[in-house]
Image (cartoon, rainbow, N blue to C red; front, side, top):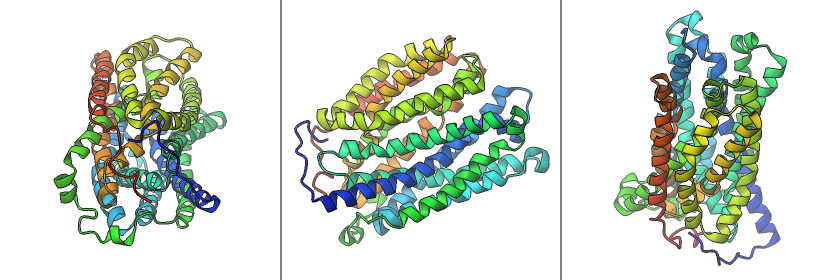
Length: 434
């Protein structure tokens, strides 16, 4: 990790402008990818009955959460395929292909017939579309994190790399905001009948715009690096960088779990557990996600000052201490404002991690296996712990053991703290690159 005394590199005005434009270009595509992926989570309340008929709303949500989790199971495959592609054939090519796949997945969901129309084929096709999207996002994270870390300005890498999560959260925010807008113009019945399809259509069209923007990006990997015999090699990754891979896997597990607990699952938690109206929960999450998005650059700058390792240790420690009290308080909260404050506090803790998430991983690997190392480690941890967060939480609630989920998150945060202790005080890679 860089130290608090890191000296900012000197760039010409033209070079600085080019790098900032590259950050904007890459992150704009990232925003569209995650908008498409999260629209599913925020619309699940409305389309669950169409694909999983049941008299029990919790069972419907468990089934849709299961499909959501299945999308995550494709991430390790996506992390491997796109990581190898990015390391051997360039970051830009990898990002272009991933956005095309996301476009296809969203368009397919938007056009799907329901269970009433084609029976069991409806949830099967829904699952297929989510697997395509999971493959795309599995490749998106590692490649974008690598690209943005490599192109970020030295001495300010925490700040600039934080825009990966600005746009990732922005994708969530736009998804939930669009749902809020639709709630104002459509009735509950209309949303369940056809309104839920609209965000998927918007996502597919936005992906085409992103494809156009990404075509102008400058490649950050060199020809020599791409021709390296170890470029994109999974055997070289585990042979020479196994310890780094395990470290990234360790703290990403807790980071992914707590991130999805307080973002995508939280809307359902406020409705099913705290007893709030769906519209109220959407308003709360819209405000909280907006503040969370705005926090990222500030926490990125903080990491540039105190060091990435220290930022990660604060994340693990505060997450361990505060998760149970916050979730217990939210369980019985009656005031929407208090719920908003509690969720914002939780997201501030998560920001110690998310603001530098991609960068802290990228610094662990050399350029010839960087996209593969970042993408695969993130995807594996995310698939197991992040993608299953809603499913585990709802399943435990269904059997009357909801509080057990709070302690599960707490234990994983303690694990994240322990693995963060393994982070070096000075990064071995990346600070020499470019």
